[in-house]
Image 1 (tube, rainbow, N blue to C red):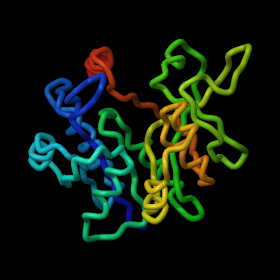
Image 2 (image 1 turned 135 degrees about the vertical axis):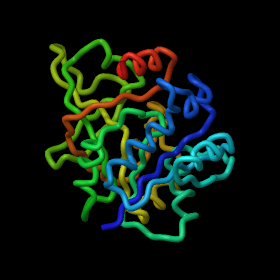
Image 3 (image 1 turned 180 degrees about the vertical axis):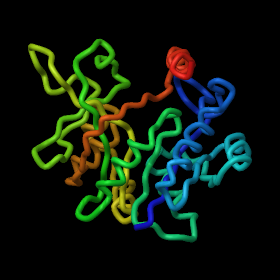
Image 4 (image 1 turned 90 degrees about the horizontal axis):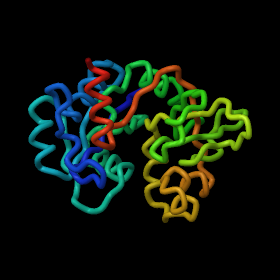
Length: 236
């Protein structure tokens, strides 16, 4: 099975503009993500997908990069556009977030392990005991059914518990087969997606299944200046 890892990245960010090129302990965030994915040796190819020439020229120094259009694409749409520009076909596409500089090989191994028929869309979750951190809207929570399929994603704590126990925290890595990816990017925005600002709810509302694997490994995205401080502390 041939698998490609695609890392969407852009300079625009409402909370942390230009974050792909922000340095963490001397190395840019996008380079840290790329090298972590590439060194895992799990992919037949790894590329960065970006509309920004600054990122393009930076990445081509150390890795493979595809220039996408300047249209207001979301990350999933940018991944598919970059895939279409390649002259090779792959069985699965893994979408790795460009703001996850500490992504782990074990997480990538976990998601690849469920990239098979009949799974068309795959993602990861991690069991978490309640903490104040879980209340943050930037951390997505998930509920799944007995077949390890996602039932709902939310920025709120789900399921509701009067006595707070364990939750499933979403690890924002996705895998799709190319045919399914083409279908889901053509869907119009859905009502639940608009309520939660979560694109994956559009897929669920339209009847697509999202297969989930529980991982033991965590990572965190860099969305704010406070996150940058956490990242520096993590490395040190």
